[in-house]
Image (cartoon, rainbow, N blue to C red; front, top):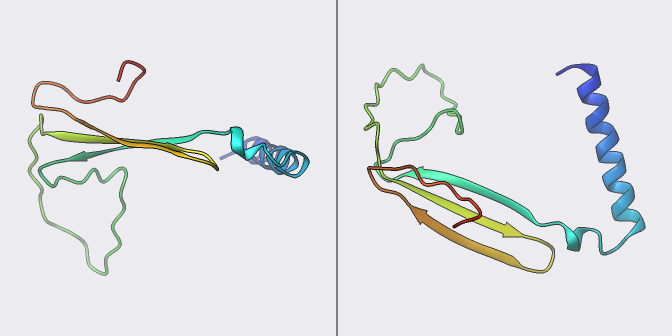
Length: 101
């Protein structure tokens, strides 16, 4: 991360805190959302989850390329929660949470 990136993040944080201070209802108008994918065969995507261990892990995990997945979506603000919604895929496609769903 460059100094320019750090400066932009700091400026955004200062702007955000100023908006919250000036307007008590500012946070009420923000919808925070996220989604997460889980495979139903127990495979863990190591790009999203980190493991800490005292020893080097040497186990080999064999995965099915077209494993069953479950996507979960949730949204919330200061007053309500949307979801969670569950989207299950099968062997022929990967589930994506989009406007149609």
